[in-house]
Image (tube, rainbow, N blue to C red; front, side, top):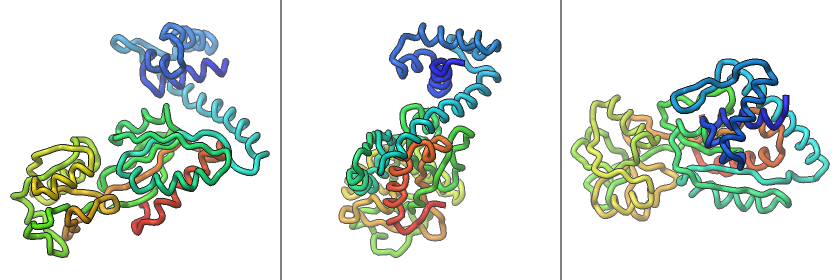
Length: 302
């Protein structure tokens, strides 16, 4: 089997459509379709089948994608073996990280990477939900994601999830709020409050809804804004209260209080392709640097 055709098949599997695979491979959709048909002819099995106006993988196609990962991984390992002749990891590592994690992890991470000659880091801040993470792996070597305390990790045989940090979520109150002087607050005491949350589907809102289910206190959300810095300003101005991550909030603007008797946190995790650090020393170096930055906080990943 031709390696180029296997790479085309994997791009199609990762991106879900011929047109998106064509964009990633810098070719036309017809060229991708031709490659897929040629691969089917080589293996003598139907690898794709019609799905509405597009295509989807057959069971045989799905099985071959897994083997394609092995083949392409072997090629990566061969390239990485050449890197072992150098004293330090070299090459470009592509990192996607959600914005509030970038706020606390990225300054130190970039300092570490800049100290390694020949190692480059290409970072993008991506406001991602957990279901979007597998799709991001088509464009990135490492994805730093977050999920609700009560949600399961991303599950896929083609992905490896590495815990980095458990970050508590606190209730952010205006400085003049009656509960601003309390050590902890009960969710029931906040039943009449106006809440500022993030978009539905993002971990902080997922956790807020989980707490509502567990306590029977359903928060009244009046605004949905994904930028925590904007949320802080709105809370400080008295437009509502919010659930915010402990290590990224500006306590000079708002008063942050833990919720009494309730576990409220998000898990921060790194997602990679299985074996990627062994295949590419550069990925291992960046991953180790991310772990070192996360380790500076008091709540290790679980």
